[in-house]
Image (cartoon, rainbow, N blue to C red; front, side, top):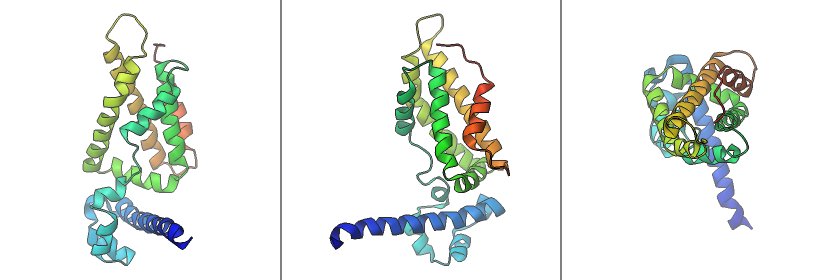
Length: 200
């Protein structure tokens, strides 16, 4: 019994320490700016050694991103759940709304991380790299479901996806800077509602 529960308890403890350390770092980044905060600053605020810090994170960027940003495969799987039940644009809206709901479930941490990313060019570039990875898997899925008609299906899919990503980013930026309790999912609905994509 003890042998089977100990690894689980260790994982829970590691997760709790990782989250507490990330919260300390995010507070510093959000207040002083990512580039102005050093690992030494973080460990001093957390009351741990630098050696301990590097047991949990390989660098400062990993504190911000960690496993928060979904992988391309995870986003594709979510998109596939919605494709086939309606237009591809509606499937994209539903996909990003699901992501927003997950962020709303941990809004305090996500808001801080989003502000830090939006206000730090280097982190913003890394975030956009993840968008490119998403596009590599999502565009073929969308293009394959666009009905026959004039125009290049891949070009349509690329336009559709990048429009959706832009809508999602606008919603996140507004939400991260807002001091209201309005859910990100509601903002995503509003922003996506401003765009009218013809049914594919």
